[in-house]
Amino acid sequence: MNVIKEEIVLNNNIKKRLTNICTFASKKGVITGGSVRYIPKTNIAYIEPICLQIDNKTYIIFGKEKINYIGDTTLYKNLSITELEEIVNRGNATKKS
Image 1 (cartoon, rainbow, N blue to C red):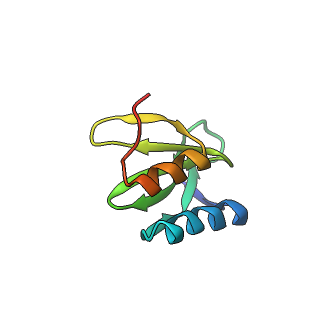
Image 2: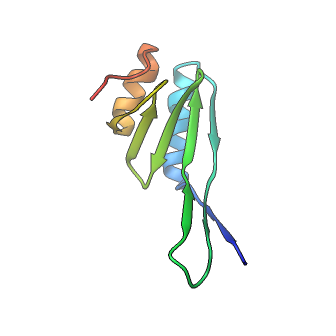
Protein backbone atom coordinates (compact mmCIF):
# COMPACT_ATOMS: atom_id res chain seq x y z
CA MET A 1 0.00 0.00 0.00
CA ASN A 2 1.41 3.37 -1.05
CA VAL A 3 0.45 6.43 1.02
CA ILE A 4 1.19 9.77 -0.60
CA LYS A 5 1.72 12.89 1.52
CA GLU A 6 1.44 16.40 0.08
CA GLU A 7 2.16 19.49 2.14
CA ILE A 8 -0.46 22.26 2.34
CA VAL A 9 1.20 25.61 1.75
CA LEU A 10 -0.07 28.66 3.62
CA ASN A 11 -0.39 31.77 1.47
CA ASN A 12 2.47 34.20 2.25
CA ASN A 13 0.05 37.12 2.71
CA ILE A 14 -1.98 35.18 5.29
CA LYS A 15 1.17 34.00 7.04
CA LYS A 16 2.47 37.58 7.20
CA ARG A 17 -0.86 38.86 8.58
CA LEU A 18 -0.94 36.17 11.28
CA THR A 19 2.68 36.88 12.22
CA ASN A 20 1.96 40.62 12.43
CA ILE A 21 -1.10 40.02 14.64
CA CYS A 22 1.06 38.08 17.10
CA THR A 23 3.91 40.59 16.97
CA PHE A 24 1.70 43.62 17.64
CA ALA A 25 -0.10 41.82 20.49
CA SER A 26 3.27 40.78 22.01
CA LYS A 27 2.27 37.12 21.74
CA LYS A 28 4.25 34.20 20.42
CA GLY A 29 2.47 32.44 17.58
CA VAL A 30 3.62 29.13 16.15
CA ILE A 31 2.33 28.05 12.75
CA THR A 32 2.53 24.35 11.94
CA GLY A 33 2.05 23.22 8.37
CA GLY A 34 -0.68 20.91 7.28
CA SER A 35 -0.73 18.04 4.86
CA VAL A 36 -2.95 15.78 2.81
CA ARG A 37 -2.32 12.05 2.92
CA TYR A 38 -4.09 9.73 0.56
CA ILE A 39 -3.95 6.29 -0.96
CA PRO A 40 -4.04 6.40 -4.77
CA LYS A 41 -6.96 4.75 -6.56
CA THR A 42 -9.10 4.84 -3.40
CA ASN A 43 -11.30 7.40 -1.70
CA ILE A 44 -9.26 7.26 1.50
CA ALA A 45 -7.67 10.56 2.52
CA TYR A 46 -6.66 12.39 5.69
CA ILE A 47 -6.30 16.15 5.85
CA GLU A 48 -4.17 17.63 8.61
CA PRO A 49 -4.99 21.36 8.72
CA ILE A 50 -2.58 24.22 9.22
CA CYS A 51 -2.58 25.19 12.92
CA LEU A 52 -1.72 28.41 14.71
CA GLN A 53 -0.84 28.16 18.41
CA ILE A 54 -1.14 31.31 20.54
CA ASP A 55 -0.97 31.12 24.35
CA ASN A 56 -1.81 27.39 24.43
CA LYS A 57 -4.85 27.99 22.22
CA THR A 58 -5.09 26.27 18.85
CA TYR A 59 -6.60 27.89 15.78
CA ILE A 60 -7.17 25.81 12.64
CA ILE A 61 -6.72 27.58 9.33
CA PHE A 62 -8.78 26.49 6.33
CA GLY A 63 -8.30 28.10 2.94
CA LYS A 64 -7.63 31.82 2.80
CA GLU A 65 -9.94 33.39 5.36
CA LYS A 66 -11.54 30.70 7.54
CA ILE A 67 -10.08 30.22 11.00
CA ASN A 68 -11.59 28.00 13.70
CA TYR A 69 -10.74 27.93 17.38
CA ILE A 70 -10.48 24.60 19.19
CA GLY A 71 -11.59 24.92 22.81
CA ASP A 72 -11.12 22.35 25.55
CA THR A 73 -14.00 20.21 24.37
CA THR A 74 -15.48 21.76 21.25
CA LEU A 75 -14.86 23.47 17.94
CA TYR A 76 -16.03 27.07 17.90
CA LYS A 77 -17.39 29.15 15.05
CA ASN A 78 -15.49 30.39 12.03
CA LEU A 79 -13.45 33.52 12.64
CA SER A 80 -12.19 36.03 10.14
CA ILE A 81 -8.62 37.26 10.44
CA THR A 82 -9.97 40.57 11.78
CA GLU A 83 -11.93 38.75 14.51
CA LEU A 84 -8.85 36.71 15.39
CA GLU A 85 -6.85 39.92 15.71
CA GLU A 86 -9.44 41.37 18.11
CA ILE A 87 -9.44 38.19 20.21
CA VAL A 88 -5.64 38.04 20.42
CA ASN A 89 -5.44 41.72 21.34
CA ARG A 90 -8.03 41.24 24.10
CA GLY A 91 -6.35 38.10 25.35
CA ASN A 92 -9.63 36.16 25.35
CA ALA A 93 -9.98 32.68 23.91
CA THR A 94 -12.97 33.39 21.67
CA LYS A 95 -16.68 33.95 21.56
CA LYS A 96 -18.83 30.84 21.36
CA SER A 97 -21.09 30.50 18.34
